[in-house]
Length: 85
Image 1 (cartoon, rainbow, N blue to C red):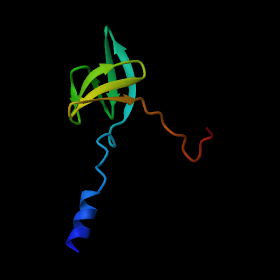
Image 2 (image 1 turned 180 degrees about the vertical axis):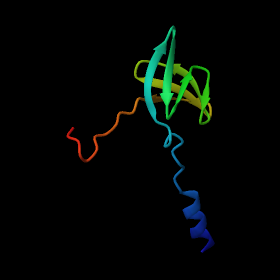
Image 3 (image 1 turned 60 degrees about the vertical axis):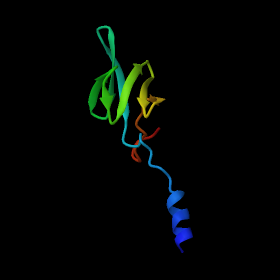
Image 4 (image 1 turned 90 degrees about the vertical axis):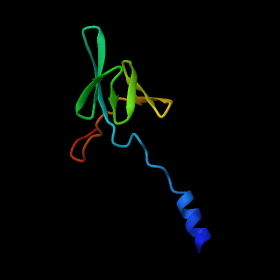
C-alpha cells in the first residue's frame, strides 16, 4: 500500500506555470515596446507572476522563469457559441 501511494504521488503532473497568464496585446509607446498581460501593462525588465520580461517582439513576449527562457504568444479570443468563426 505504501509503495502504490508513493508511485501515485511521484507521478503527478506539475501544474502549468503559464495557465493563468494571458498575453492580450503588444504596443509601442515612443521607443519602447509594452505588453498587456492579464490586465496589466509591462515593459522589458519588469516582473509579472514570477517571470521577468526580457524581450517584447511583434507577436510574442520572451520571459525568464526559473533560469529558462520562454516565448509567450498573443492569445486571441475564441469565438463564442453564438458567433460564427
